[in-house]
Length: 111
Length: 113
Image (cartoon, rainbow over all chains, first blue to last red; front, side, top):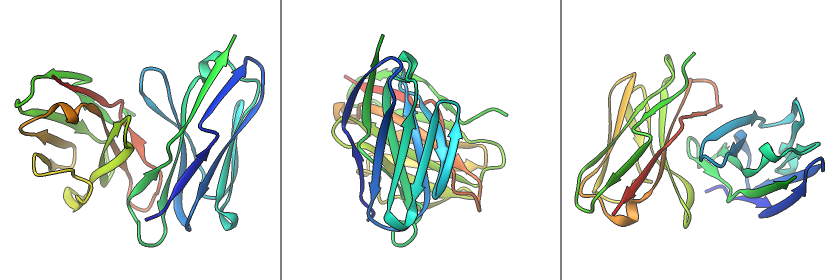
């Protein structure tokens, strides 16, 4: 099945800093989503972005499908951005319907 | 619109007991997914349904786990008998046919003592 790798595994930021999280995947995808899992465990949809660029407030994401990676940008980070960020993909070939999650990036934003 | 609804939000039970987790997908969604999140294995797909029919249950860990979807607005995931290693957060998600984006419920945190 499709492989998903996220980097870095951990990130510590000072409030106000910018950061970039990366998601690499091993095959063509029909779907790629970024999620934020908050400290209460809820999975929050950030972006549905199988290709292209999207922005939502201080967050933006870019997926370059031909090169099989996606980037999540956090600008002017706030303590509420702390949590785990997951990338998940739905492969276009043999893994249709099987949403595969990466291991996540643990982000801690300090005041 | 209401999102995906799961109940209970927290469940604590003793080894050997039957556990039933419940999910109500977003109205009109044709697909329903059950996921499990553990420290060791991360987030993994257990089973998914299309129009109430199970399509792929290859992620169900063993026969103690079963899932049903009796109608378009309700699904259950049952563990019988439960074991301490089943302790995890169980998420339900749904999506519309022809649209790839999945929407997740708040999860049920299960603790088996």
